[in-house]
Image (cartoon, rainbow, N blue to C red; front, side, top):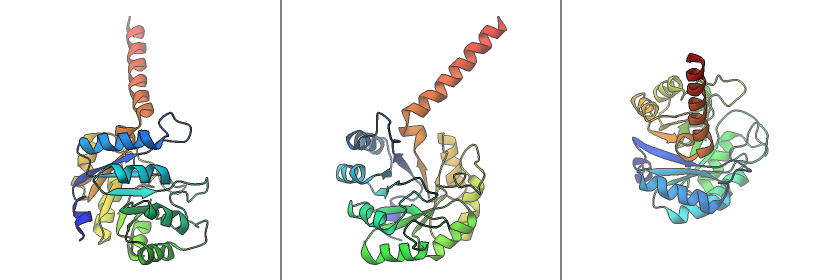
Length: 233
């Protein structure tokens, strides 16, 4: 296994992404957040968008998992080979692509996309999957890592309240490549649970880098508590 991969074994990856229209949707802001995450112990950064990636790669000394979210179709995570090549050109060490069996905008299969990436770049490929079958297929197609990123985010999968730990376990038993737990990891305890289930590494985004959501969690808790106090008077 490459030195790059060994740097991720049993470690935390922090996803630094902001949604369109949000105040933090800016390459400089995302870069500063990535730097703060690395200072806090993150072994790698996951980020999206060509400008963000170029800035982050230049600013941190840890591996970067890059992707490009584009479009509103069912396949939107680095949806085409051209998107993937552009991500690799930023210097991203790993390119994350949609690893489902859904039709891609450019008509290429998952296998064709992975093969072309390996032939034309030095980047590793992470397949973002939603089911055991997709994870197996992605590994068979040559993906270097398989993630549970899309579990609960495809029309045919159930969204668990937290990370899909059962999918992590079954994937670890089913494939030879590292399995990355990603999606709805909202606490240190859940991150630890993923590692205990066999995950090679854990990606945490929202709970660390999305203050709007985190603020909402606290706001709802405070409001609920306030209502309970009033009702109890």
